[in-house]
Amino acid sequence: MRFGVLGPLEVWTADGAPVHVPESKVRALLAALLVPAGRPLPVEALIRE
Image (tube, rainbow, N blue to C red; front, side):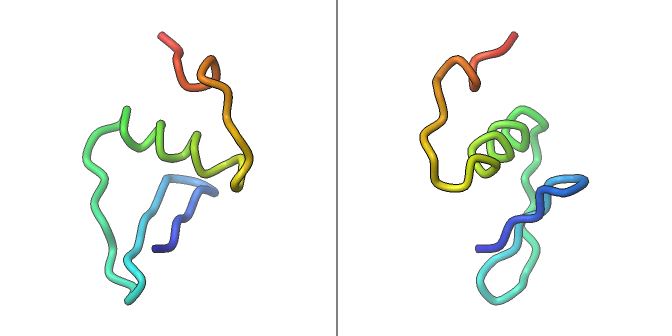
């Protein structure tokens, strides 16, 4: 899979087909998990109201 995080979140399969991520909360969570690039992310960074 490939992810684009500069600008709107974009996701593609390994063969280049776009993947639709429908909910804004899911897109925000995915982006938050991708940004640290393999480093642990504290739970507090994910829990925001």
